Image (spheres, rainbow, N blue to C red):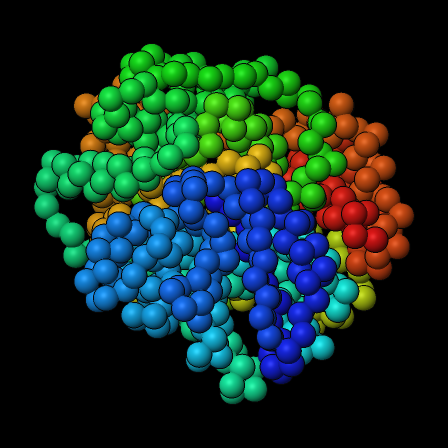
Length: 630
């Protein structure tokens, strides 16, 4: 893994501030502690920080082609680079290294913008083509690797792996985006393409940017990939199970290539256990596995991790974390640069820290829930859909909307429909209902929380527009496919992959995600919904396929997740600190919040009147951001 950065004078003027570019590059040293280099010519400057994984001796970046006319700075891994190298050699290209980086340079020369369609892996890169006077920036299909960018008022375009690098540029306007604030307090993260700053965007997964200096800095944003759900993979349960194992093994095997120590996260859940089981079957050496345990039994899965480690004779490393260890709280904003409220970032950082003591590369099980409907909220949503399907939306909206206004918290439904099911949910369309299920706060709560000033800036904007817009692009009429598509567009890149990228990079650890191999993802998207969710069992076909490899205790136990005891923290150990942070001078002086609401939320949670730990954590992280960036 690495960090990339760049400054481009889109007006073509031939001057790049080397000291500034170097400072921006050095801010990402944690992403690449092994080496750091710059390339500056005329109107462009590129920087790179390297974490050496493959071709340790000759893979330095930025890297050029034979005549130096094409330069690349790149973060990621192209797993099919050997195959592409052979193809490109046959086309007459000459290679001076054995790295996957050089494949990008020659792929650009051969295929231009279409080069990204040939890559299988995780990547974020910028290619500069001097002859064409264009810069091409691309992000991988699922958004595993990040790209932030901004067009500045001084006619410069800047980009980087992390927001902290852009913030160093003195011309960056750090005005907060009110829409991003609304989205953050709804979801707990800021979904692509927005960032906390109005001037900074995130390049969306499966997208590219082409910046042409010969056309006066013309910038073209394009989508080169999208996920299609079409249910064209058919067969018996056994046939599909067998094929799933074959595809999973292949996705894992190509991610086991490394010139440095490699291992895997092992939580004891289905997905990480599946990855470890497949790795063990394909390795002639014991697999290195890492687990974090908690001293709080409700959050500890280590007994299941130990069971899998013993079954496959892994070289298992495990540490216990004090559930009341708050040391990392002050560092979270340093890692994430903008407000980010997934509290599982804390244990994720801890497991990355443990892994880095023993390996440089770790495989994770991320993506299984998105691919095969493993989340509880997806099952609950599908139960709601059964009711919504009984009446047309045109009837449901006014009827249940009115009932919801009268009885917004009425829990009248049978047990299988409980949780966030309300009359209000039944009056929404599917995308709006799903956003209601995943949200950290309701619209009514945000209306009470936000100041009049912020609400005026929002001009009625609501986060649900993000979901409705993505829903328009969904390729399937299946209700399950729709919410899976929404997760792939929002929660997966905005929350899960952001969490793992920053936590791993803060520890200079590369994390590979085989279940998010785009070919495997495309194949699973072609499965019928009954292969994913059947009889209330999520990830149905994956669990059936894994029965010969893992015990029922691992496969069919209740999903625990990876979390911390926020509710107790805020009532006891962090009681005073919560009040101090949420009611900080930065929060009260920001003009964004209603002070009475802030005080009321703290009082209601700490008295036990309401459970508001998620909302309070979001406020706490936002306050930390304001304090850091005051």
